[in-house]
Amino acid sequence: MSFNHQFVQHADKIIKKYAKTTNKAITGYRLDPNRLENKIDWLLSSPEEAFDVIWEGKGDDVQIVRKSFAYEDEVLELYSQAELDTFKRWNRGLLERGILKEYDGNVPEVDTSNLFTDAQIAEIASTKNILALRKKLSAITSMESINRILAAAESLDRPMSIAKAIQERKRELQ
Image (cartoon, rainbow, N blue to C red; front, side):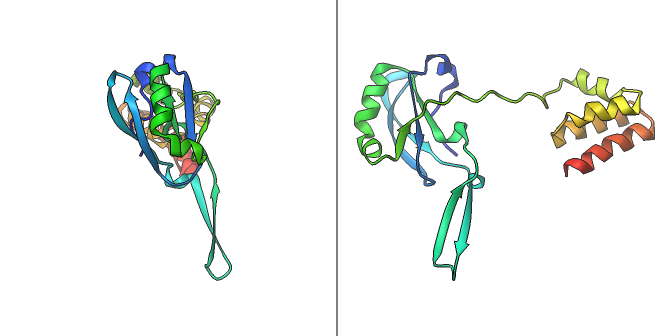
């Protein structure tokens, strides 16, 4: 779990981003973007599932392979020139040893394909045509959303065939 590395309220003011180049957690100092007179700690720590550990031979040789990159855990954002200048001074060793690198990728978009209001859940659960329901369900990849649709179908006293179609999609996702 990383902390003090991104401040959402300043996301429109990013002037520089740094990503870690190691699978180890790293920490350092930065200015508090909300109160530039304050020095605060930051931590970048990759999620465990972002790496595979491969044991070779008799267990003496271990290879760590990156499977995924998590922007929200592995990128530190800076929002002002003053913050950038002090960051470079306070974290000189990390920069000089290549433990941090400049990151020029984009902030990933949030996937909202599984975000439904209660009214949308009820609308899906109220679908009368089984084929149309299955088509709607096939686009949903969240078990939580499927469970909400199933609960809505049960509370709306939908026919057993509707509940069965929802349960089939639930099994597909498991």
